[in-house]
Amino acid sequence: MNYDIAVIGAGITGAGIAYELSKYNLSVALIDKYNAPSQGATKANSGILHAGYDDREDQLRGKLVVRGNKLYDRWHEEIGFRMKREGSLVVAFNEEQVKTIKEEKARGDKRGIPGLVIWGQDELRKNEPNLSKDAVAALFAPTAGVVCPMEVSNFLFRNAVMNGVTPFLDQEVTDFEKTGSEITTIVTTKEKISAKLIVNAAGVFGDVISRKAGIDTYHITPRKGEYILLEPNKLYNVNRVIFPTPTKTSKGVLVSKTITGDILLGPTAVNMADTERDNIFTTPEGLQEIIEKTKILVPTLRTDLTVKTFAGVRAQPDTNDFIIEDYSDPSNFINAIGIRSPGLTSAPAVAEYVLAIIEKKTGTLVKKEQYNTTKRVQFHSLELAKDDPAWGKTLTPQLDSPPLPLLDAAWNFGVQDQLYNYTCFTDLGLGMDLSSTFQNALIQWVKEKGVNTNDILYRHSGSWQIKDSPK
Ligand SMILES: Cc1cc2nc3c(=O)[nH]c(=O)nc-3n(C[C@H](O)[C@H](O)[C@H](O)COP(=O)(O)OP(=O)(O)OC[C@H]3O[C@@H](n4cnc5c(N)ncnc54)[C@H](O)[C@@H]3O)c2cc1C
Image 1: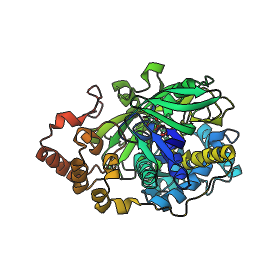
Image 2 (image 1 turned 180 degrees about the vertical axis):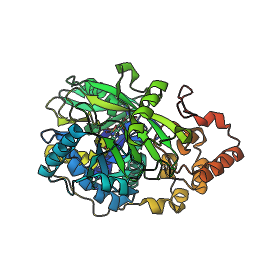
Image 3 (image 1 turned 135 degrees about the vertical axis):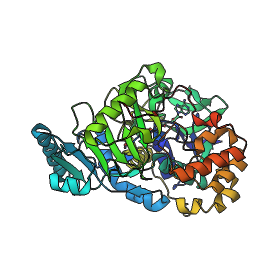
C-alpha cells in the first residue's frame, strides 16, 4: 500500500498529528520503534499545560504554546482525558525577583494571556499554606494546568487508530529510499513502507531521521530532566504548579500537584552526549539537586514518602526553537522536530501547523463524513477493550489507577512482558494513582499472576530510589 502520509514517531507530536489527520479522507501510517506509543519524552515530563507568558513571541514555540494551551479545551472535549486548570505560580523571594515576575506579567498581558495577577503574601498564605514563609509575592496564571501526558497521547493514538490510522509499532525507521527529489520508501527494521508524504516527529532522534532524509541542517542535544514523585501529604501538599522565579537559562525546578494529586518535584536540566539520547537513569546528584531546590519553595517536603523517581530527555534543538518545515528536496518530507518544552502544551497547535503545511502541499484536505471519538470514560468501561482486538496491543498504561479488571484485560491480550508499563512501580514516567490501597491491591494482583515483582519493579536496575530524607 502507498499511504498518503506516514508519521514517524508516536509521541504526543506524532500521535497528535495522526489524530488530526484521521479526521480526513487520507490513508495514514504511524510508525514507532517501541511496541507502544508515548515511550519517549512524552512519557516522562512535568505534565504541565503552560500558560505561555514566558516563551518568546517572535519564536514559533512562543506562538504555538499559547495556541496549544487554548486548543487543549477542544482535545479534552473530544477525547475526554483528565485535565485540571488550577493555575501556576512563579514565586519571588526578594525585590529583584519581584521585578522579574512583574516583567513576566507585563509580557504576558501584552500577549493577551488571560487573568495574570500578582499575588501578595496574604493570598499566598491563604492559597498555598505550605509554601515557604519567605516567599513575598507570586505571579498567578490561571490558564496553566496539568494533564497526564501519556494519557493524552495514548488516547490520541487510540482514537487515530480507531479512525483508520495504521500503526506500525516495534519497528525502527533506519533509512529512506529516494527517486529524484522524492522519498519513495521508508525502510524500517521490519519492512518497507511507501508513502506520498512523510512527517518526522521522532523527538530526540529527530535530527538523526532528518539527516537520513538528506536534511543535515540541525542538531538536537539530549537534555535530561530527573524527577521525584511523592505521595500526597498534608504536610507538604500544594494546590497548583509552583515555579521558582526563572533565570535566563531555566524555568527552574518546580513543585507541582499532578492530575492524580501526587506531588511532583523536578526537573533537573543536564545536557548529555549524543550517544545518551535514551539515558533515562536517575542519579544521586540529580535527586539531591531536586531536593535542595524544591525545599526552598516548600520546606516541609519529605522524601521518605517518595513513590518513585524517573527521568525524561528533552530534544533541545540548536535553533532553540521548534523546527516545523518542509523542503524542496526531499519534496515530500516535513520535519516536526526540536519539540522541546513546552511541546506537550503546544501539541494541538503543532498538529494544526503541520496540517496547514500538508494542506499547502497537497491542495485541499477533505474531512471524513463520519468520524467517531472514544473518550477515556468509555474506554474504562472495558467493553471496548474486550471487544476490539485492534486496541489490544495498544493497551498501554493508563497512568491513572487502571482498575484491576483493565489490567486483567491487558494481561489476557498477551502483554505480560510489558507489565512494567502498567504499574506505578516503574521508574519510567509520571505515573498513576499512587494511593497505598491501590498499590497493595496491585502487588497482590501481580503475585497472583505469578510475576516476580523484581522483574517489573524497575526497568533500569541502575535507577535510584530515595528511601530516606536527606540529613
Ligand atoms: C524533563 C521534561 C519536562 C518537560 N515538561 C514539560 C511540561 O511540563 N509541559 C510541556 O508542555 N512540555 C514539557 N516537556 C516537553 C514535552 O515532553 C515534549 O516536548 C514532548 O513530549 C515531545 O513529544 P514528541 O512526540 O515530539 O517526542 P517523543 O515523545 O520523544 O516521541 C518521539 C517518538 O519517536 C520515536 N522514534 C524515535 N526514533 C525513531 C525511529 N528511528 N523509528 C521509529 N520511531 C522512532 C520514539 O520511540 C518516540 O515514541 C518536557 C520534557 C522533558 C523531557
